[in-house]
Image 1 (cartoon, rainbow, N blue to C red):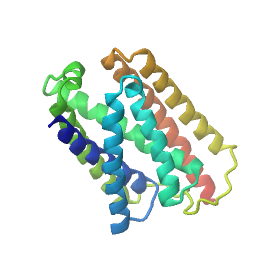
Image 2: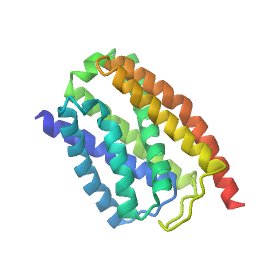
Image 3: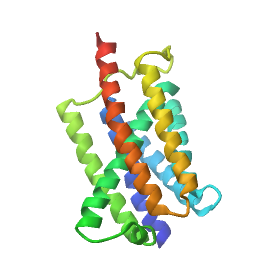
Amino acid sequence: MDYVIFLVGSFLEYFAALVLMFALFRFRFDPRVFLNFALISFMMSHVSYFTRLNPEIGDMSSYIQLILFIVILCLLFRVSIFYSIIMNFAAFVAGFVLQGIVFFVIFNQMSGITLSELQGNQLLLTTLMIVTSMFSLAISRTLYVMNWNFDFVPTSNRTNVTIKGYNAIILVIIILSISITAITSYFFRFKYDVYVVYSILVFVISLPIFLYYAVRKDFDDAS
């Protein structure tokens, strides 16, 4: 039963993350895209479940999935590796921060649920995934309707990318953020609540900086 419950929450979480990614970077939506989203989400929910069962790699499961998502976006949607990294980082960090906000506001402050209780209760964890997914889809819809998105990601994977200027700054932000949280995950692998708090703190700091330079890059590329 825990397996089914986890897959439901995980599927919705990945599906919402993909929708947010495409809405944020002004990619086209159509039935084929949503079908691909569903297939990717189904596959990645199983990757998430089985990697977390292995104690040797369970703590790094999120980062393994991030790498897989970067590769999938390149292969299925013909996005260059550099822009795939940017798109996946944006969705990954936004989802992590959003889930942290949902937990601390709705689950912790309003319901008194702690991180330790959340970790040991699959039904609670899945509920958090579902609630976060609903908020993520609402945000995606708002971004899409209001046209609040970035337009600097090319539709061809043959684009030449020069790592300088805003590209270099954005790449450094991504590398530093992921490296710090990955190291935190390793050192606090037996202290789940400490790892979550530190990771959210890192992403809360890095996300506005990333968005600032992404906006600057968007204006610079358009000029």
